[in-house]
Image (cartoon, rainbow, N blue to C red; front, top):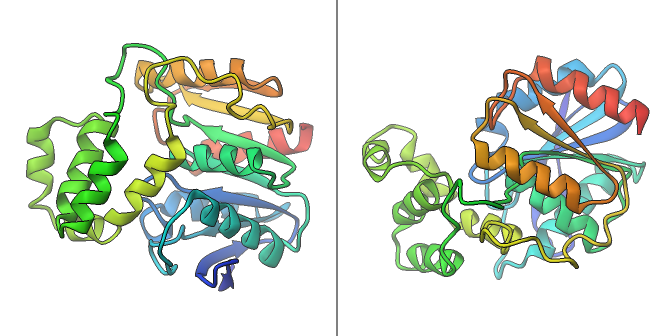
Length: 271
């Protein structure tokens, strides 16, 4: 294992940890998550480092990575490209995206980023009435809360509108020791909102959405996940001509290294 930084196209420093020496596998976290909050990423890497170079990085504005205003989704495409080129040596990379990290990965490939294959764990798609759609002004409200010095309100909006938590539970969370850490990365929640776009509107996915994604894609969902996420995974897999859908027994919106690592290994070997 080693740690380091790369410099993205706009000069932002992106911090990463890497294990192993084979073809690269890049892990992308979803909203609010980064290396220090997702130890399962390191555990997955340790199970795969015998065959692959596994790279886990802090998305901009989180953990040990920097950030540069103004934000555009293209900046995170450039961050991922820098990781693949500067850490992975430009070799064919497998990109694994969890939740809205999967949306980021899909959007990056749609924009022209060259990767070998994609693995997506329950990317953010609402395709039925099992979950309320995101408010149409979701991103604007997140940005306004941060600009007004109310980062906690931005976190609360994410927890209720996107994650579906009851307001009473979020009110209790505001008193928890981990809440200041969430407030610190509150500006980046709107980044994920922009990557998600209108895929959580409850409307059918646009025909031109991800129509340039032609690499092999594995769409994963947990059999014990929320029903609307399972539906979303199925709809996404049907939307992508190169996609394979796999239900993972016993898992929900998160998973463990001992479950994920073999699935990744099998798909990379066979795709």
